[in-house]
Length: 285
Image (cartoon, rainbow, N blue to C red; front, side):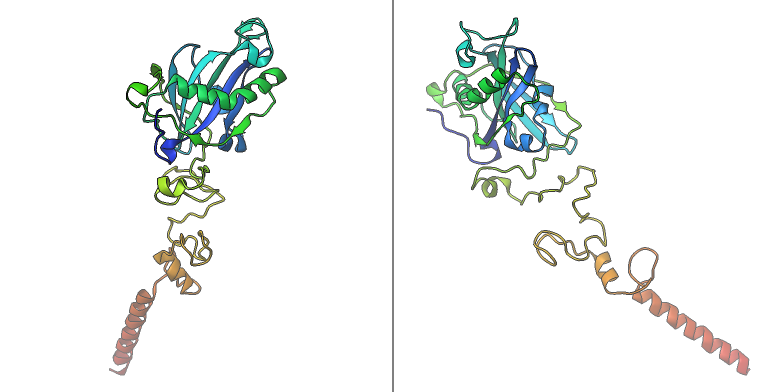
């Protein structure tokens, strides 16, 4: 048997399936739960392409927030018996029906896909594919799929039927992928993520996009009340020099733009006193 990949983002995969229907065209029958929750399952039909056959495809998809997902999948004919039709292969109207089935991962898979692995994915999405095909309704929502163990790594002579892999040109989408707060199976996030992921409602560092739901912790004077994770003064709060000066002064005397700091005021006071003394001496003479 093949050994699974280590736990963590590389070892977690979310099954998905795209199927052709009799009158509604291709639709998403099953999709990762985090894409369904954010209304992003349509990305699978927008970007995944292929042809039926004994071949696997790998596609990297980058979102507007800089986050990336990887789609590892195959495209096969839809079996007639699975959707209540006679014969071997199902028909979508006058055309042969096909299903694109695979997984979404947060990192590029580090092993070769096997036919046996995709057969396992097929078992996970088969019911969703059948229901979507029979409903033949493009408005039907995709079934949300939780993360499972990632593709098994080849293991000597028992590696299974390793499929030829076509790596497609990476694509970009104008949609935000929000993978920073994707829920991993219990116990895996701490082992794999390293530094804590951004809290829900924030965007990954370096996206260049403002987020009204999240304070700007990198700008001097921002978040003076300590509204980061953990509450006032708790972990994640940004205490900048500008914020401290603003909190410790009044009126226009703060340390921010447009005011004078305390050292500057002391120098001005000393110069004023010196000028006053000189004027008094000149008046006496």
